[in-house]
Length: 497
Image (tube, rainbow, N blue to C red; front, top):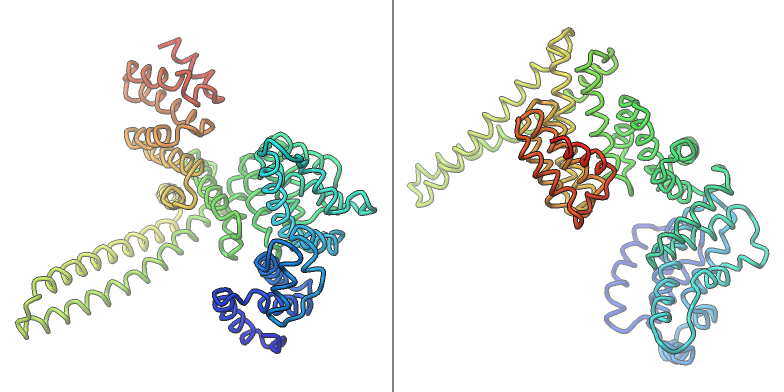
């Protein structure tokens, strides 16, 4: 590994084997020696963070005290610089941060800050939990480790100091302190003075405060100057959310689609899929209200074409599967095989799937012709195209276990909105009920679902008593939805029923 500086493939293969084998053999000193060598080649390289991770991990495995570490290194017959023996993991991390803290374009700094914040928060929690011994002030730890009182006075250094404090507060579940530090960044610094990581984080904070104007500046700066950044998707997701807030569904959709087409889905895939799907609901509304122009119909054509390409590929797969199972059946029948019944079932299933695939391709071809012809029929097909694509997006979110939580609740709520637009009241209510029954603690979405359910029960189904029951359930003191923004309207509606 130490001789493979200019051969990436050999280096990666060597490290993979070393990472697996040396730890199990007690070879932490040798692993530390390797990664210190690699890290010193170029501390600014994209791989340096991974090297530093292994340096910290290996160093901590050598022993708890300086003497234990020296004894372990001596026994392994390797040479390790004193700084990796004498210094703690926090000090090693802070040195690496300080070395690059004045350059806003070095995103690695925020990644190191995340690790440092995690260690400081863990250390502070453990110390402050004890009844005896000194307590630890996490903010003072940040100031000391990053030497923020020792001349680190550049604007980005100050901002990164506040960002580190905000991260520590988040990890210690001190939301007030976290917001205080993010507010300082938003108040003191201009977008051009910040790194893409901080721009995205503070932009998201500003969105939660409904400060769309200030957030827009941060997200637009990411789009203008940091499109190659690992935080570029913060710019796409944030800007699209603002466009949707401004009733610019077409622009929001196009921005989300650009991110998806270019694979800019690092940390914000869930948000981009959600905003794209919500934008499609906005496009549907434009079509049904007669406000859709040619560019919106063009979006429907593009969605239809993408769906047709996907369906064509599925049809090819289905044709091959049908052919293979038919051939397998003929072979087994000729040989009078014992499992011929299963072969017949497989062939029948493949035939059914083939018929379904052909029908789907046929429907998409017909939809494409209708969209190309224009007129009222094209509007009808465009509307259904938007609703179908939105359904796919919301369903993807609701089914993704890694995204479970508030996003799932919102996805179910918006699936109800899709069904309302299709005129399917009972189906819409079913989605709303799934939302507020399964995700009750997320009152910012369950309040909407409760209220809309009651309105449909009263206005569409003519069931005022049922609507009354729904509202009473919503407004129970122990129901989080009773404190939602929709609660006031629900109380007024209940009073009139």
